[in-house]
Each structure stands twice: as C-alpha cells, then as structure tokens.
Amino acid sequence: MSVTRLAITMGDPRGVGPEIINHLAPKLGFQYADVEFICVGPEGLDPQIGQYINTGVFEGTESSAGIISALSIEKAVSLAMEGVVSGIVTGPISKPALKAAGIKYIDHTSMLCDITNSTTVGMLMSAENTPHGFPLRVSLATTHMPFNRVTDSIHKDLLVSQGKLLHHNLRKFWNIQNPRIAFCALNPHASDEGLFGDEEELIFRPALRELVDMGIKAYGPFPADTVFLRALNGNFDAVIAPYHDVGMAAFKTATFGKGVNVTLGLPFIRTSPDHGTAFDIVGTGKANITSMSEAVRLALEMSNNAFDT
Image (tube, rainbow, N blue to C red; front, side, top):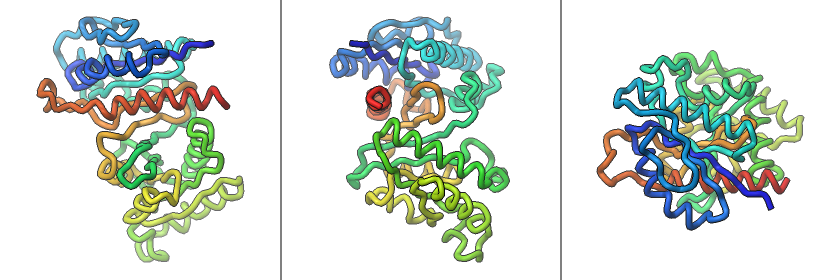
C-alpha cells in the first residue's frame, strides 16, 4: 500500500504561518497518522511533524523573508515534481517581501505556473462547509492586477479556457461528474441588455455558448449581487468571477477562516489557507488554525479522489 506524502511550507517566517502550523501539528499527527508530512522552511521553525527540510537562516529582514519564502516554495515544488509528495500546502507569504528580495514573482500562483512550465492555471477558492449548507467555490478569471487592466484582460478565449479548466478539475478532484458552472458578470445587473456595458453580450455569451457546445454546463452571465448566493443555495457547483475583488469579497464574507486557495492546472495538488501573513496578530494567540487545517484536509481529499480515478 502506497504512503501518501504531503509537503507543507512554513510561509513568511515573520507571519502567522509558522505558529499556525506549530499549533496544528499535533492534530495532524493524530488525525492523519497514515500520512507522511514534509515541512519546509528556515532553520529553527521545525514543527516536529515528520521530516523537516531547512532552507536557510532567516536574518530578520524583509528581503531575507522573501528569499526564505521563495526557496521553500521551490523546494516543495521539486519534491512534488519528483513524485516524493502528492501535493503541497503553502503557508502565507508576503508579496512586498518577494519584491524586496528581488524575486520576479508577485504571488504563489505566478511562481508555481512559471517554475512548472504550466500553460493554463487557475485560482480557485473553495469552502466545502458553509453556514448555508452547500459549498462555495469561486474561480477567478483574472487575479492580481490593477482594476484598470481588468476589462482589457477579459476575452472569450480566457473565459473558455478557465471554464474548461474548472470543469476538468471539479470532475477529477471533487468527483462532480457534471459540474454546474455559473459565470459572474462584469457589469452591474449583467449590463441590463447593454445599458451598462457590452462585455456580457460580446464576450461572455459567446464564451458560454462555446462551453455549452463542448458539453459543459455553463450558465450566465449572472449579476454579481445574486450569483454567489445562488451558489450558496446549491444551484451551482462553482462560480467564475471576472476579477479578484468581486469574487474574493463574496467568498470571504461568506466563508472567511474556512476557505482554501487551490491552484488549478499544475502537475500536482497545491492548496493554501484563505488568509495572508497577518503580521498584526503574530504572537497574540488570535491566529486561527481552521483554514490551514482545511487546506491540508482538502489536499489529501483531492489526492485520494485523483488516485481513485
């Protein structure tokens, strides 16, 4: 019987990642006794939950934090690419720290995409347990970019590509055989028949028609003020949001602290908690382990589902 292995990066050493992982370690060791964990991070942060790979000494500066974060991610990726682990769970990192270190990437997603030579990736926020009783899964068509670049970045091929990627992953990793995917509109009231923009008519609807012709259950575009509630009520298995904040605002309002960030399209599974470094609460005891716990649980569930298929 093969052993499931999972890599966990500690994240920015100044953030809540290390303390959350340390608090979570006893639970993981008990709950997943049959799983081998390999944690990756700087010297002195070993959470004592299996093997620890030291990526260097943290020197206390922002640039050092960025370097340590990047090295930890690169090591975890190499473990996954070599087949040592089935997936990675990444602790939160600081984008300014990456910049201070001279790292060319602005986030996990772009870094993972580049170093694995992945051509099509997606950012999916997933909360399998919500107060409404149904999951909420939100995929972002565009991610970290200024708002004034969003409209020029959204085109039919992008929406089709993201729709296909989401459909494939929901089937493979969530065992949803016929996923119902809703598209959130870009403009108010989904443009109200062209009164508030023409992107819905010129971009969204042609993309949806193409997806439907492929046999994918694609619906919309629906106004942003109702589509997420409809998903929470069980009408859709996932929503594709046109830009970062419209998707993240709805997702975190409904699920904050219970959500998981999943990168789709990589040659391995990658999850992370739905929060950042939270420098302001480090050492106060306020950091919550729930999202990191869910990130580990979902990574293992995805691994099992992929193995079963």
